[in-house]
Length: 464
Ligand SMILES: C[S@@+](CC[C@H](N)C(=O)[O-])C[C@H]1O[C@@H](n2cnc3c(N)ncnc32)[C@H](O)[C@@H]1O
Image (cartoon, rainbow, N blue to C red):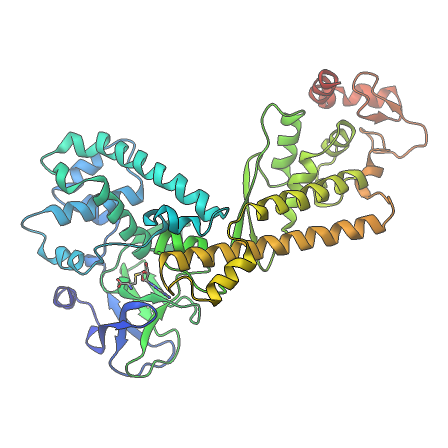
């Protein structure tokens, strides 16, 4: 592979060699000292694996371009890799890269049931199960759309589901993504650069030059001769590391929990609430990432406040143009959502098996071999449970503060005591006789507001 890269114009490779390292496995070793920020090596555009390279291939390109709608980026790269691997002549250079790739991967999609059960209750457990099914569906679709239609190019025995999973994990664990100036992005695999392991101790130091199309790696710190060169894969949680790369980092500062918030479309006032979620920057079905740094993001509270609104509160909120749910809606609404949140997070935590303390003990006793699949699953579970515990603590402290306020109402409940049209606050307001959900200072405002109020009024009246 190196001779192909050098012939193609790669620079800097003579200062490096591949080597095995105790914690990370195979990686790149320096043969001289590097200053921080110094260019270590550059891989030229011609040898990269991108969608454009696949489409430009004289044999594969026309077939790929005939598929409508186009294949996804990952499916294109997977097809390209498997296609090159399957050729018996004409692809020696790219095949030298494929020959250097691992023969198997340790993504959580390859975990045994027993290994995956170490993180029972975690989002990794659920996502992995879902992914395994999704990958089979994606493969079947690719077979039907491409492989079966061109069996001369894609012999069945070299494009099996196992080949597909291997190539998928090659892409997941080795592809690099870059944002381009025009807002577009590019996903690429760079031979040799894909031998670099991850550390959070350097900032991003791999760069893509859109004008030349070359990929360069700079020194993210000072390297002495014999040191391992690292790049940073980004602020990735153990869940994602385990799923895409097949490893985990103990006490990963990027650990997170993906909280799924969903409301059934038949729920009362769904349409009105959906409008409020959208105006609040949310959706009726949304996933919010809880992190150690921000275990209870405001977006979770905004979502739940809207989900638990009663008829009068919806009416008051719909007449506010700004993001009214960013503040407490009413004492009772806030009490309800915080109580619900504490219970829901407790429920999530109870579904983890083994629970946090037991896992910590098992890890301290060396029950799981460091670096093994079970050990990685244990670290994912630990990270998610720690995040959820901080979420619960924060919700509980909000609840305590709320209770100490002794029923004092927030801004929006007083907003419901104003005219829904002119916003005038008056001691004597008349309620809409039909839905009882909004109030007006007089008949003219009620008439003027009717068009806006109609859909809410009908839904509220049906519910009543
Ligand atoms: C881009 S490749 C790096 C080269 C890889 N070690 C090899 O031998 O081909 C990414 C893979 O390297 C391994 N890896 C990278 N960083 C690691 C780390 N900090 N600890 C453990 N394994 C790591 C994981 O197996 C990951 O899927």
